[in-house]
Image (cartoon, rainbow, N blue to C red; front, side, top):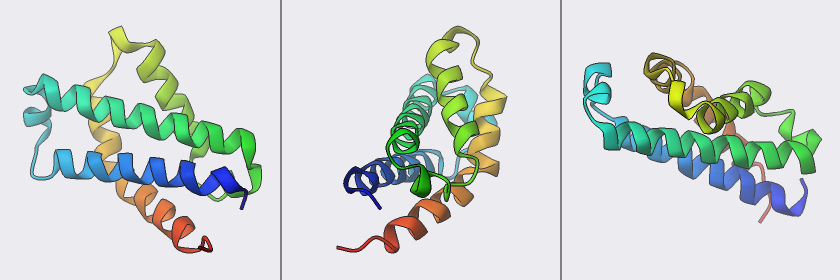
Length: 115
């Protein structure tokens, strides 16, 4: 693993853990009703996508071990560039359906990192 790879994996993991913490005990209706929560979750997804995009550019071997990496980076681009048309149901679906698997993968990669 290249030197900066662990940093980008760490940043992505921390952001994913924040989303997990921010949304714990919340429903989709709670999410819709709380603009600060929506903004916080979207920001953390942006960080995940940015960190993993940098990982992909610098260390393709490690990046290839992150499931759905291309989709994650594309999701970040939608959030950043399509900010006016973000689908809250899609964001919440990623929180409920994909976040845990991503966190497992990031933790596994970081646990395998020496040092």
